[in-house]
Length: 159
Image (cartoon, rainbow, N blue to C red):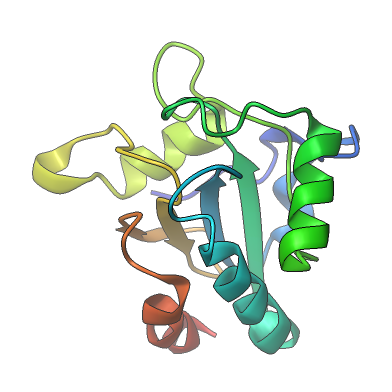
């Protein structure tokens, strides 16, 4: 399944855009949360962004408050937290729903392209990661407990 690069997204700064800026890149799309036990992964995500961005990787963060209310803040709160605590420079977008009636269209596509265990469409928790190749094909889904460092070899294979 290919993602649609015209899907609308909004940056944490409130800028409406779409994913066309990332067309032709390998994407690592992550649903994030600032108060989660997996929040430490921001550091590894930033490391991947820094080390592989010039080779064509784009890490994209989408905060989500659907799991334990672990992303309660405003866009400004999220941006400040990510920059000050983890030095995040990769693109971060406004909060989205990744499950349910209001699932963001991008996550609907990602889940269809890489279903979870036993074909489940639901995302189970924060920091679920989706790898998309340069052609927009959804390649793989990774659980929250799979660290960005563990995914690096898969990413490098697509670059």
